[in-house]
Amino acid sequence: MDHNGKSFEDGYRSFEDRFRGSRELIKQRLSVYLSLVGSIRLPSQDCARAIDIGSGRGAWLELLADLGWRATGVEPNSIAEAASVGAEIVRTDALTYLSRCDDNSVALVTAFHVVEHLQTDYLFKLLQEIRRVLIPGGLVILETPNPENLTVGWSFYVDPTHKAPLPPVLLQYFLEQAGFPAVEIVRLNGYEGDYSFGPASAMLSMLFRSG
Image 1: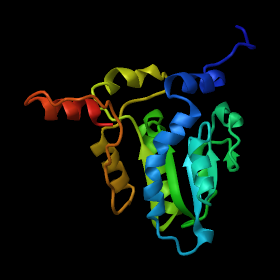
Image 2: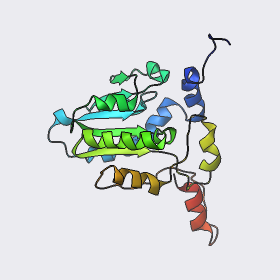
Image 3: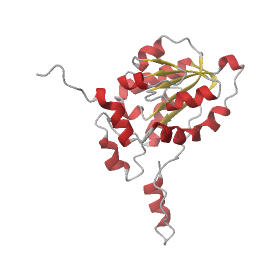
Image 4: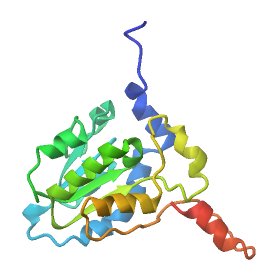
């Protein structure tokens, strides 16, 4: 066995560059969530603390830093070493990090394309910890590939670290069971084709554009 060989994790940055898009493209896509962040009613600016689970190349951390948030990225993968965004990045497991956080100490927790990598029991524990650390009125944003979109049926497994797709209603159920009082499903991304060619338009739009 070659102990000096390169693992898939070692090359995960190049994988992300190729299959998720450039860091600038990811920043552009994630900017759609900034209005949600702006809707959080903070008791004071000192409470503007955020945790981004699976922070990857740091695109979201940079957007938060630009808004004056004190953001911490939690990333177990070596891809974190490539991120330099004016924010703290901790290379550790998400549950381990959250367990060290005080109750009601964070106003925003985000995880973009993370939950589909997790086993169910771990995910449920993670959601419970997120609920514990959030301040009253805080916000959690979870983005994941939507299996309602037929293109996800093949694209999901391009990433060999994915476990299983999470239907929106199932993830909503998990959040409700973890104690979140108001859970909303927002379908944002998808193929932007033109389906205005007959009675099948509405169904095709749902099947290919539900992101």
